[in-house]
Amino acid sequence: MSALTIQFEKAAEQAKSLKERPDNDSLLKMYGLYKQGSEGDNAGKRPGFTDPVGRKKFDAWAAEAGKSKDDAMKEYVALIKTLQ
Image (tube, rainbow, N blue to C red):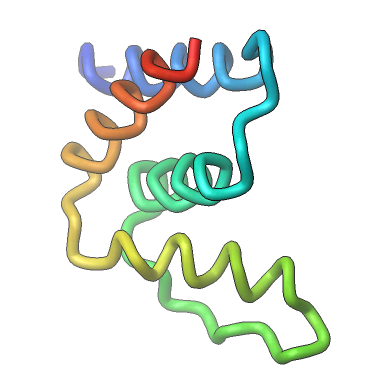
């Protein structure tokens, strides 16, 4: 396991215990970067209009498309550090 992967997983654990709940935009950014860093580009289908939360999450992940997993992991770790 690479040092970056270890930092990424540690940041994911830290994200669960932030002192304050981040605003929705930050939460969506966290989600998109986490999914991109752990799974890569989103290959799923965008949820329908009856699932607005699912659509927001899908869009947040899709916004990170084309970014390498390593770059997404680095950005995720940096974002969590700024939110602590």
